[in-house]
Image 1 (spheres, rainbow, N blue to C red):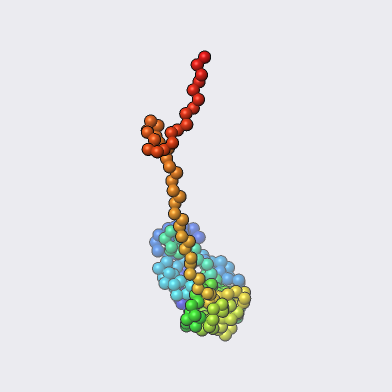
Image 2: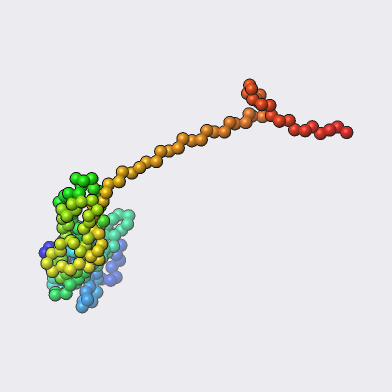
Length: 222
């Protein structure tokens, strides 16, 4: 189990989030099934270090508010322009109670089907599981060795999970497959059609050998 620590303090609701963020402080909230919501603040720089390690699947111990509170990062708002966190939600862990989380997949080994010309398609990059917080793995390994032939695939139900971890993702969903390699066929670009012969400009003489233009009927003089 991986557990990280982060200093936190209670936050006054009157504090303006933009002012906090400008001073390097990240506004956040911590709550749980049996815990009332509490506005808190943490160092933005320290949070980013913890977030990089924890993601949504590692226990984060918040220190400085009502003792130490073990939590999971439940939600995170990101500034779409700067890519920096704007607000974080921490969910209080209940001992003995399982939670559903999304855990990243890590592909290991070599698929024998590659030697047969197969293309390995990684369809899923994370999987949803259910476990007690302290049993949640940081990631789940997927061995590519079973992909021994073209057309073979590994489903979510075939992924080996650690003890105490239950699968939430549909067991029949394909995680990775060995697909037949198909070379992209580039259709030849047709040659442009020959431009129609342009009519001679008004007043220009026709080309030698070209038929003379038809003459319109002259109005008969009465």
